[in-house]
Image (cartoon, rainbow, N blue to C red):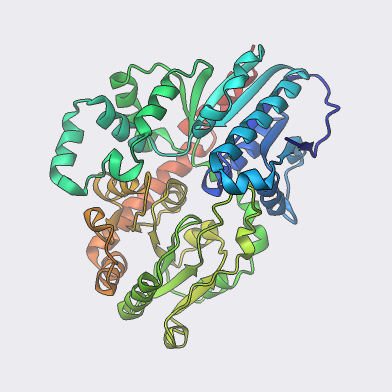
Length: 466
């Protein structure tokens, strides 16, 4: 296993060094990358330990942006694995990656009084050798929401909760199950996590005013006294975090939005892990066309599943074929963006009034923080739970299609109805107003003196204090 530390190995002795250990897929990388920049802004050295190809993508994001001087404290430690092994066995790749991470952490621990490790919770299986390092503190990052964490644990541990029971009764087979989302091995993972002795705390991409109820309920019912820090939304950790996107200032989608009325455009994007079938693409195109509403649609295939492959997500040449004549028919009203689009800036633009999304938690947090309601179209894992949270708990969105009918092609009529409801009805406007209220709460929370800001300061103190 070759290790290339782009920051060099001749490190001075530090009071604290932070090693960031992400799960090497982009939905997991991005929040920890933002958290890394936030910690580095406190003059703390941060080493981002990930596959070379993934680090390469992140380095490109820092090229040509207005970098904070403290970004000099952010170091990318490039880890490589043999391609022949990676292509044949993903689990073997992760085992080898875990060995490299542990080797690197051993080296880092010799250059600091305390090595703080922030690891994606999914990496626990592969970094067991960290136990042999004497001067470490480990914090587990959970990429999903407190609502998901509580709802899944509740099913597995058979916890009785009147409010949750009522919600499940109301939704019936629309309430997701562990089997239909995370699969059969979640219980094994939960047991492994509970037996993980190094955990000094949990870090969440959320904020307390949004999910405090589920944080408290989880702690009570799961008998979990591990400290929890809600540091989200991660894209708001740094006041200048939007500078990561400033090179997109002239992106064609933003030029399009500049010409539209307030709240008149729906943004359609399904993240980096979803590939729609050709039949589904055709139905989505027809639904958007028949809705008569303005839209921006990001059309792309899912990222390459091979973890050792350079993603190049911002220049991905998708092979999705749109119906003949579609773009000509919607010209001036709808825009198709192939490959990458500046999602955060699009959601933050005053002309954007809705978001049709797979409801991944990163996208949910971005949409909520920008005050944009969601037409939810979940595909797998935590997304169906997020849909319930968005539509039935927060009431800032609608479901495009029933989760119980997820194996079916979503017809154009359902897509058209969802767009019209979200963008052109009093019901949709009420959702928008609730989303704006939540957005204002977030902005107050992350501002100086706010609850989220105090939580951020508490976390930094926790990892640096003796």
